[in-house]
Image (cartoon, each protein chain N blue to C red):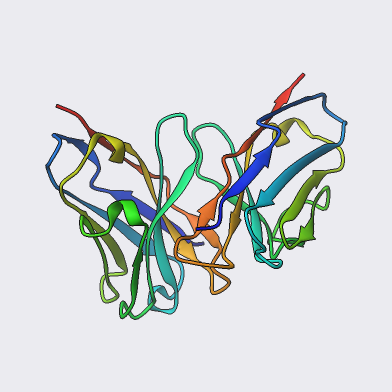
Length: 108
Length: 118
């Protein structure tokens, strides 16, 4: 099973700042990695797929990069609605499909 | 608009059973694999099970193998998860999710809560 480790667990930033979230895989997942956003009381929403492709309707301030074992989700300038939980997910070697433990982006 | 409406959750005693349902609309249901993903209270996401569009192939995470059965009725546009021998650690919000052919979850239901407790 591929284990995904996200860091940091919590990121405290102010609106307008840049957010950089990390996801590290226990073995190569090539570029088969997605990022999801989850707000309190809501289901997750697909943001990024195949490491760097934005899903439909996702604002351009969200970008993904990386391949192999190290991936990054960047939010270029935080909007108030971006404060949420973020999860990565791999589909390279399954079953199982696995998620990272999540990073909470909170208002500083 | 894609809609996934989960139901069937509730309070059940350890060792009990429950069947979750997910009614789909807004897309050609039989063309998509579907999945269940759960989230324990205050915890992260955990993939539980998946089924191909035809229903011919099914997949499970190890912790539910032998206890859960995923199925679908394409004539009713409905996904199911039969859960048996339930344990306290199965307590979670269960989301049904559409599996895009790239094996990412591109649409999610609102979740149905399963609580296993005596």
